Image (tube, rainbow, N blue to C red; front, side, top):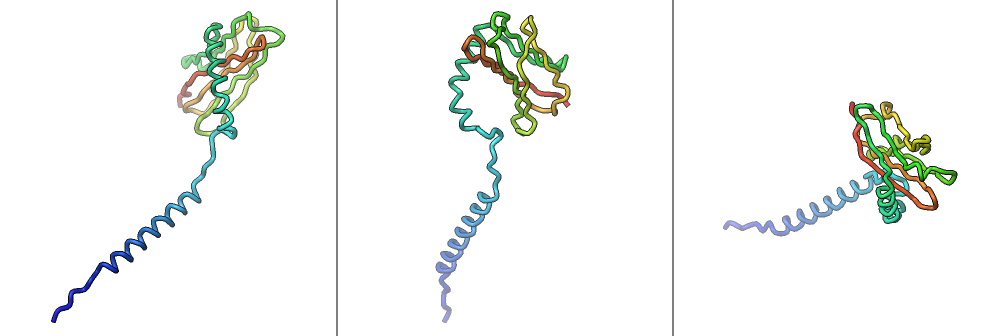
Length: 151
């Protein structure tokens, strides 16, 4: 007489073993995954975003510009002369999205004509974001432009 073997108990046990092994793999991957942010204060910066939108609109209506000139290898910032005065202060930030260690911050100090240029030939090749933020007459202004430094 031939007896049929029942494989259901082995299948159930194998399914549970695979399930637990999968859970362990996911836990190990999650525990060893680097979860660093590019910016240290990423979430705080996101909360300030509406103020940045208002500042960008104010800068656009004032006639200020921030432009990248690939041929000359420079960034030019133009601030209307009427905004330059004793209460003028600001910074230009060169932000590298892929590596926060490459970021640079430069004091915004345009000449009497309202123009400041920055050479970017010494920047690491790849994508960058230039941000100009300044305060004049008790109001905040903000401009940004994306650019790619060629190899």
